[in-house]
Length: 80
Ligand SMILES: [Zn+2]
Image 1 (cartoon, rainbow, N blue to C red):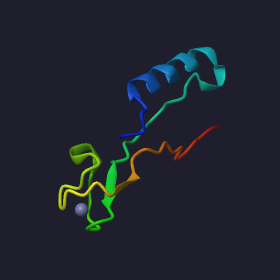
Image 2 (image 1 turned 90 degrees about the horizontal axis):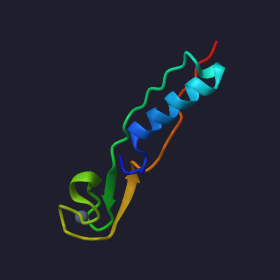
Image 3 (image 1 turned 90 degrees about the vertical axis):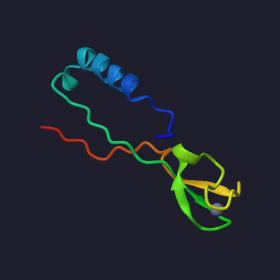
Image 4 (image 1 turned 180 degrees about the vertical axis):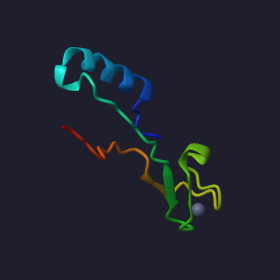
């Protein structure tokens, strides 16, 4: 959710290439959101990055690191 990827733009690009590349003509694109989770190195709690940003909501420390949510992973490709 904090990767910077805009799903609507990604889908638009996919649709564009489906028309240009015959191999992709009948393909589908499915995506899943990866929740953004941050850990606080001060109190060791984890929390939603979207809701609280870089400051820990438990102890208000700024000594935090994003654990997940900025990645883009290709989970599966199927073909015939
Ligand atoms: Zn904390």
